[in-house]
Length: 156
Picture 1 (tube, rainbow, N blue to C red):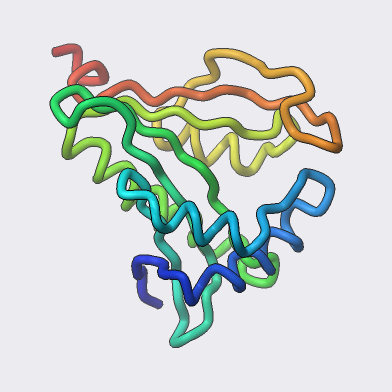
Picture 2: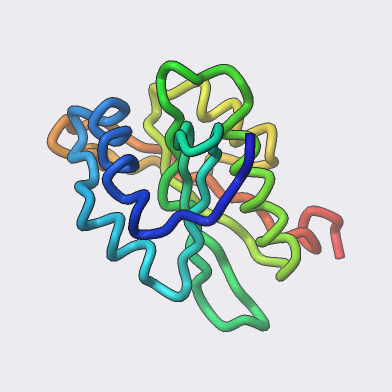
């Protein structure tokens, strides 16, 4: 398996996976991925087995480079390849980026997605709030989670 940066040619596969993973919550179409990939502040990575995209994720850097914060936009794993640590591989990459610039990281996750919440907590994310009816059209609630910057976590 290999982690590579996603390009426009991967947008259709990402949209296909979104349909499988988030059918009741406005899965992103191909065109949204194309726009996301084009943003200079975004980094989208995929886990590949040969040419097969098995998992994808995106992070955005916000704020100035000397004092950044980051936001995880999405993480998705092909249902046939879950429980193999693919989401963790992507999170490792994203957390290395954030730690390299000493930035805090935010994300939203469905309150009923226990597996994702456990993974995020393993990366030192903590629940800091709840957004009622965040996901549409399902109306599912989301937790907002935050991972403190490296210097904050070390008490510096």
